[in-house]
Length: 234
Ligand code: SAH
Image 1 (cartoon, rainbow, N blue to C red):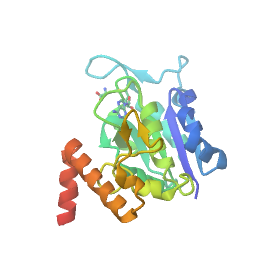
Image 2 (image 1 turned 180 degrees about the vertical axis):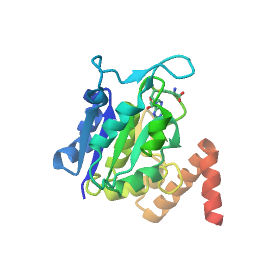
Image 3 (image 1 turned 45 degrees about the vertical axis):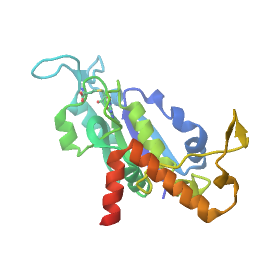
């Protein structure tokens, strides 16, 4: 099954951008996934091709019109389209590795990129858009957020990441941040690689890495550390 991404945006030229290079770009060339970016403005009906209007009730900025957006969504939605629909939005559910994994196992996604103040609430409800946030800060548009969501998903698609193991020990996969990495030279500006990593005892190395992971998580992410400990108990 090929993962199919359809993007709705006012700036289709912002895709594939980063996704066309490196791991995700090679996967795109191989056909492991597809990406189609559609211009919301193509669905505008008036002679100015307007896609936004002033906020009802007053206030700053502009709001994406529900009728135009709904037409765009309906047009890219195929018959019995199994793909979930998302709206990139700072009010959304925070993007997590778990979400990326779930999505990577599915048929793809239809992703709406907001602009201006955002989109009319009624189209979110009427087209069942799941709001997803990439973090607690405000971007000027949803395009980079959509790129980030897709990057997190595509690298998990079967065959995309060369070394399966490098996925399993990664930060968040086991509820912990990843241990530190080292490579040659053996000494860098007076700093040696920790002896344990060059000693060849894989049991000890695994133990050291787990301890480092735990320590880092404890120090940097008390929220993850607590969830990890709770998970061990439960
Ligand atoms: N007025 C809105 C922000 C609009 S920013 C508010 O206060 O909630 C314009 C668009 O950028 C949004 O519609 C959304 O699609 C995108 N965007 C901004 N920040 C984002 C974030 N943290 N995560 C995902 N999308 C974001």
